Image (cartoon, rainbow, N blue to C red; front, side, top):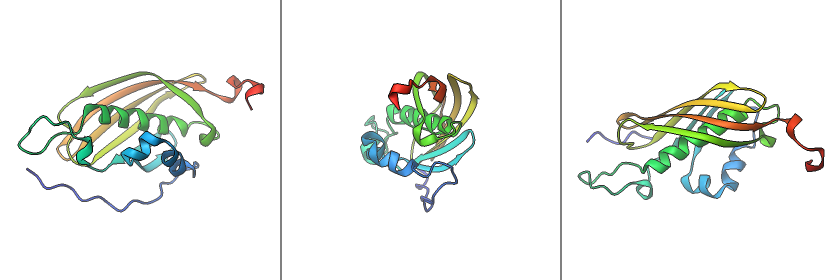
Length: 160
């Protein structure tokens, strides 16, 4: 068994969305997962989750259990949303929702997890991303998401 990689010190990512940290803190599930946003740039996002025994799927792999697939899927979905938010003029006010989430599990996800999301397309109403999740043993999963994007022109004036 390879040793657990040490976590790098977390720093503020470069982004035009300074409210990302409070967004995670206000979101119960994301804050419970202790998701960190390591990088946000135009069309890309890198998110990490440190290993936590609470996230393990108890399948009995000689005392070390892989992270539950639902956590991996959440990381893919969340990294996609953050990457797509960078395509909005005001990321903190962006409205979007997942319409399709596809996850291919390649190997058990172990250790600290890192998701790298890239926007494939961000149009007026639809966004598509590709995501890779790596753990201590290498690439654990890949995913593709489709989102419905609600750009300013879609917002009813009565909603503002």
